[in-house]
Amino acid sequence: MKKLNQIFNYKLEIFNPKKNTEKIKKLLKRLKNEFLEKINNWEKYKPIRGKIEDFFKLCKDGLNMREYTQIYT
Image (cartoon, rainbow, N blue to C red; front, top):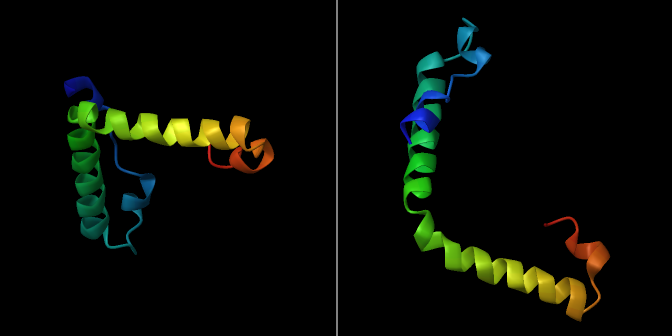
């Protein structure tokens, strides 16, 4: 997790003097923290992901909707 936390960088947009850089920094920091929290709790989301994958597999194979589900998977 520490290594993953270190690779997050600010966008180059924060060097634009016309932009509100503090607002951008706060947003990016909040997004990074949410992402790291979800990665730490990944086991909780794993069953949900499996159900979603099963649903799309059913649509592709069982209902012959292969061309429509390609967009979402």
